[in-house]
Image 1 (cartoon, one colour):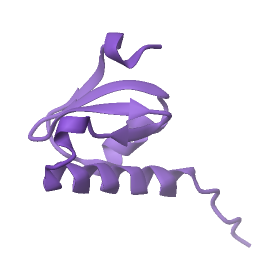
Image 2: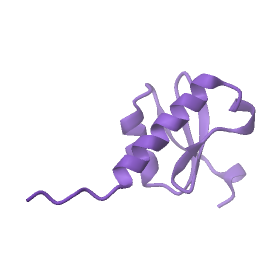
Image 3: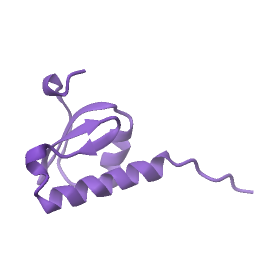
Length: 81
């Protein structure tokens, strides 16, 4: 799938990183839109900022936070005794 021809998978009206992470984790490539942040790419199950957004600190913080939650959700949970 070419990222330039992909459609927006989902729009989020509010920034809820855990909800966004759960959604993104299930997709490999595409785009999402988050109100207040704008459009972001989903590449190999991770959120990535577009090149022109990489100077905006609030976007980089949000991307980092979402990807950290995706990593936490991807970790196997220890079995309870």
